[in-house]
Length: 140
Length: 140
Length: 140
Image (tube, rainbow over all chains, first blue to last red; front, top):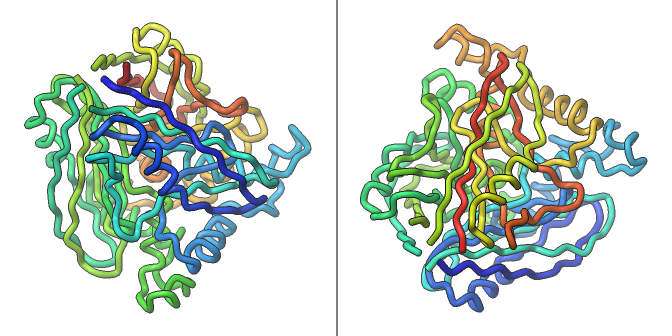
């Protein structure tokens, strides 16, 4: 069965950044020669995450930021900080909870998503990063 | 490789509803002509979610409802409400956190699940909805 | 398309245990005869979970344990306990939230992961368990 790996790169901001990657993922499908199947959108790293959200400012600039600060605050004193003397313990925990990948179906090379549903990458690290997103496409 | 897309429809209740869709997903496999592989169970939308739980009243009517109210309360004042003047900010955040899809393995057209493990759709929106669930099946 | 199911077994400790299963998953790929594709790492059960984390003592012995205790404490009085007269309500809720599976891409039979990213199984049940992990591999 056809299996195609595509990647794209992102520049992110420190601490909290949420980037709409829907079009990047769609472009990977456009060039895949696979019509129907699934795409595993994945970050190879331990301080990033993948999910979906309606990409509008109220949610992405305020509500998600506030939710993550409430559940996993950056200011807390994590044991992880003693291991490496960095301060991204919250970033690791956020990545653990939201997870680093999600799988999406597509038909006729088009992602099956809701009208208000966008695929997002969430930067959770304490510093700005260059990120590579992997899209492993399997199908027919 | 064989790739088959099946769908089924649900009617949900407003605010919090959790529906056992295990048999619906199993029926999609029964009619797929694919023996072994994976099925991506997916909601195309931004206020629903997919996960698994032991589908018994204590958990589904009380404990999960209480957990989600504790983590992401409906009554909070989300910025998202100012964008559209609706009140489903909590619904979007719950969908973001639990996520809109999960992938399950199957063998001989039978889902591989624990005895007490059921696949569920969680309605997170503030109003009752008609939902279409997508099952993209890939395998052999 | 080639589809291969592999499994491996774990012994876990009660209440909270987090086991690095990266090498176990990699070994499943080594013996699969599939070069490129995705692997769905899955627990058939309702009180375990799969995710990724940097597997170092600060995070795995302290920070994740504390996070889960904060979000879903074991000591709380869950309605689930009245159904079966056991005390693993928190375990079910943790499994529901983190989820029982995750999908990873691989190329040339090698998992695509970050340097500090390990695949982990999280035991959430109130008693020590014998666990079977399913790795459904699809690809080319």
